Every structure is written in C-alpha cells, then in structure tokens.
Length: 444
Image 1: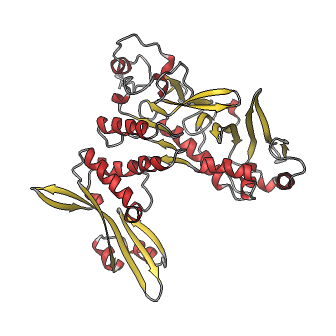
Image 2 (image 1 turned 90 degrees about the vertical axis):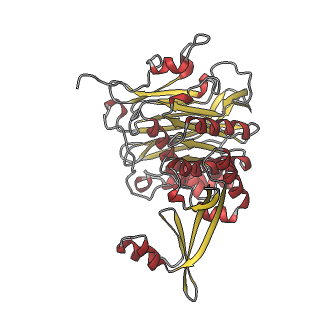
Image 3 (image 1 turned 135 degrees about the vertical axis):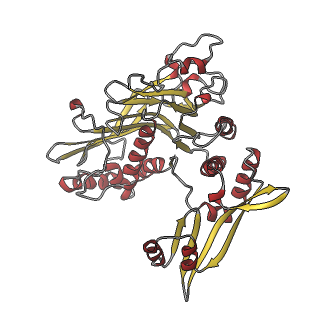
C-alpha cells in the first residue's frame, strides 16, 4: 500500500508537494481504511484518495509524476543518455534544476522509504530505508557530485557482509561512475538479480496508471479468452443502464489491404502495418493479428455490443458506442482485476471523464465493496464536484489542488477545514470556501 508520496520540480509542481494516505482523525468505519501491523504498532491507511481542482491546476501533473518515477525505476536508463524529465518551467533558483521523488509504502509487513533526485543528466541522490522500532534506518544511500563521482554506502541491513548478494552489490556500486550516473542503483541491483531489490521494483511495476487516453491493451483478445471478464463487463454495462445487454467477440480472417482501403487508412500506414510479420496492431478499436507461417494470415478481432432497438437485437462496433460506454470499458477491467489481486494500487486521472455523476459514484463505491478485505487502493482525480460528498467520502479522502500566484501547484487536504454540522459542503466549495475553484476574471 502507498502511505506517502512527495514530489518536487515536475511539470506544474515546483516546491515539494506532499500527499499522505494516513487519516488525521480517528476512524471507526473500517471500510475506509486498512489497519497495518508495523514495527511501530498498527497504522491505519486509507483505501481511497481523490483530487479536486480547476482545469490546469496540476491534477494530471501529479499522476504523471507517479508515472515518470515508476517508469524510471522499472525500465532503467541507457548509459550516457540524458534523462527526459519535464521540470517546472518557472525555474526556482533554490531547486537547482533538481527534481525529487519520494515514496513511503507497505510491502510484506514491512514499511519502506525509497526516493531519488535527478536533473536532466544524472541522479544526484538515491536512498532506500526500512522502518525499525526507532524509526527509519538506511539500507543504502547514494550521492553523485557535479562531476559525476558517485559514493554509495551499503548497510548490513540490506545484505550481510559475507553474503554473495553483498559481494555483487559492492561490485555494482563501483560500476556507477561517469557513464552510468544517469542510472538508479536500485535498477542495477534488480537487473542483476538481487532479491531485495527485485521485490521493491516489482512493487513499483504493479502501480497501475490510467489516463483519459489510456486503453486496455488488446481488450477484445483478452475478453475472447476470458469468459468471466466478458461476463463481468457485460453485467456491469447492463447494470449501469448503457443500453448494452450483451457483449460478444467476433473474429474472422481478412485481407488487410482491402479492409484498410475501406477504412481509408493512409497508404503509408498500410505499408508499415503490412511489414509486420507476427504481432498485434490496434487501429480504430479493431485488433489485427498478423501471423506468418506458410502463408500470411490476418485475423480481425473486435468487440460487438448488442442493443435492443425496436425490440430487436442490433450489434454495434466499439467506435459506435457512446464516449461514456467506451470510458467504462477502460475502467471496468480495473474493478474485475481487483477481485483477484489483493495488493493492487490504481491511479486514475479524470475518473469522471464522460460519465454521469451517479456512474462515477457507483464505481468508487463498488471499489469499496469489492476491496474491503484487501490491501487495494485507488487514487483518482476528478472535475465533477458532486463527488465531494461527505456521505460517501471521509474528509481525509479528499484533496484540493490549485496554483498559487507563482504558477505552481499546491496541495491541501480537505481535513484541514473545519465543517459545521449540517453544512452544505458542495455549496461551500463552489463559493470558494475551500479554494481550488476556477476564478472567472471580469476585467477582459
């Protein structure tokens, strides 16, 4: 589970922004939190967190910072290459062109802190710590100076001095010098089979991030193979009154060239796709499977959605469905997966995109129902202010984000504000009581 996250100097985020999944008040309703046994006693951790604020306030920047850090940790960097990081363009001198990412998380009954700071050329600092009775103790620390010289201290808590893993870690730390100053030490340890590093990288690898433009990879192919997934999504679409009462997966062998001409695909793109000997290509919601054995075969796989029109079944392609139904197809596999995975963490940007308020509320409440006895979490951003409802949410689950007069995103928890009994929260928010609303200027 994610416990805390701090980021600075990334996109619209300038000075450090801190996000926490710890409730600040006592909670009696255990649907909203998970109690975690730690070296320092039991810690209550929230299951959900929601960001609200005006357009261009930095909600997406926050989610994208998580995506950048995850990919940098999981995928690594090629030696000698620059680091493609989108920093705050306001250029605060005190930040020194350095961006920092810091995570505190719970894994296998242990609490870890891992973080790093980078500019566009090198990793400046990196640290990996573990919670003990007296607080966090370092497992390794790393500092790289301005001329590329790296110092790494590996502690016995990470690996015993006489162990093979310690010997390998010591060899690897010597390799991070001039050409590898852009690489994380954690990634090198993971890439060389150090078990403690492998499980930490796996935690980051399992962070699931859904943006508005995200599409579930090869969903028709997955739904063709997984009858339970197809039945679940079909049942949910019926339940949410989309007009869909059945989903099927159609597949047939085609001549791709003839089919592409009917779709008016540019000739250059047709030629690029036809060069693929084996693989899967998604075009306009339709999946083409290319396989070349004795002869080249192209199989078209696509979802078909059945509606009842004039009391007769009529099939629709995915691109004929509403934006809301297509958005649900991006989100429902998440809920299905959470029924099987008890340690999933999802970040969803604009969860309410193209959805009615009641559908967004239903999805978030469905998460609570299906994940009550798990370690699953969902952290989302939204524009729909109707979701700011303290009947469905605790104050600690809601965060407000807005830009200050310097143009940098700032984050504030709703729990900072005192509410009067019976207060109309939505009315108070829209009146500017909590900030984080667009200010319409009249002087233009």
